[in-house]
Image (cartoon, rainbow, N blue to C red; front, side):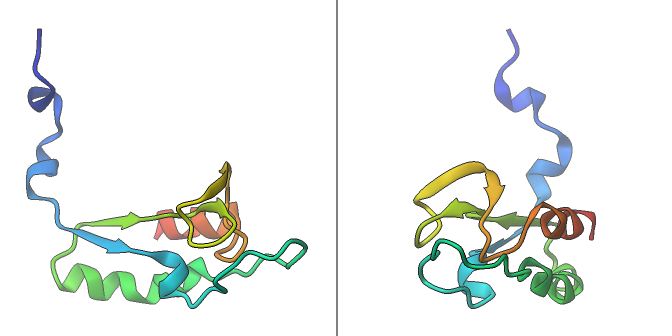
Length: 97
């Protein structure tokens, strides 16, 4: 039986991650009020990606991003982007960049 380490892709060993707490990075409200419009804030990360790469980052560890009531770690819906950050299209644009 193969050990988990032999199944890892090679890039894993040299990856340097830029970890972002997106709610804080984009200045989102501290609590998610019902009925508030979606705020398209994830795109605020886009101008920083080239800078992160210049510093040596090869990956973006983004979290938490799912819908929550307050700090993000109290997820209420694992299938929806927190509306204080944006929507699926905002997330898709960030992944594509």
